[in-house]
Image 1 (spheres, rainbow, N blue to C red):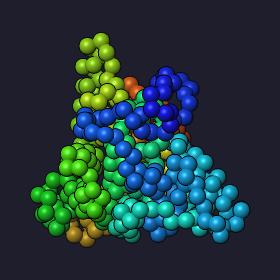
Image 2: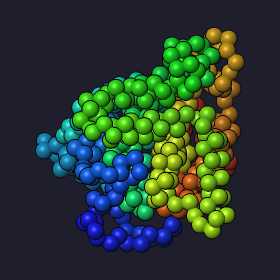
Image 3: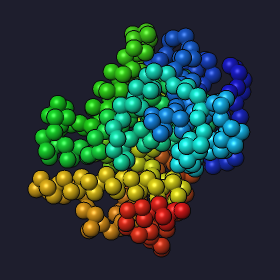
Image 4: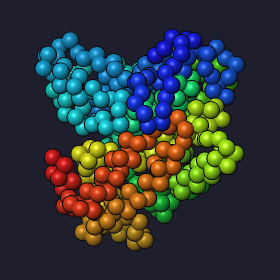
Length: 385
């Protein structure tokens, strides 16, 4: 990271740029954190090197180049995990290689108690578990790293809250959708009046766990951080998907009509862009390299099929296809078509680079159309092997 006052290299949207670490110079502030002395929160380092609970607890110990492995690990084990973490700054990072390397290495525990509690609160469900939380965190980090001008414009407090929102965005997820919770009058739907019951629950649980740290902040910072955290988690509700795309396209058109551009690095645009980031990362499986995507596909479909059986047992209108009726290629192609406009719109924002996930999306669409894997348990994983 450049020293305070040092000039940063110019960035082009699609050009070759030097790598950077996110976070602005000590003079940078955001509108919600203005008029305060900037500092490096103690939890920032922890958020940058998240190690995921249970099997994942030790998977990402080197996140953001802090690859501190246990002294007791053999040289071969150290090399395996270090190699798996080598691309942690990049979109094509393969979290599954870290899971495998973790089985052969025992890195040190580097987490702060808060992050440990968040990851430990994720439920043991096929897809919406701690590994998914870690994957969204890594994707968020990669997008910030590759969007250099936005990265440089954010103050550390905004980055910290964004990263913690990413890792906690599905904490406590029961493996069922909002639609199912509402249809069955689940206690979460009742509690939150059928309005984003999962996302409201995730925000409440995460902020309850974060309370000891949040209470150390000045009141203004605590209010601003809490507001950003809630906004980011509510932005992951799929019911906002179409509206988020429409609003951003309208903002892009308005800026163009005025002879300018919609620049994510401008303070007034930062938080809206971060909401696009976390939503994109949350639905990004098809936007990852094929082998990574295939493993996620098996897990998410397992969760969907379990809900489909519950819907049938309870006489509910189906919102998920039953396993025996699933055309996996058609299902995935439909989802890719649904999410691609989000990534394409984000790539039009100045200071943002979504070229890597867009390339993966197009490759995934081509492969599903030309040579789809079998729709059987482990079929996607077998095809990716």
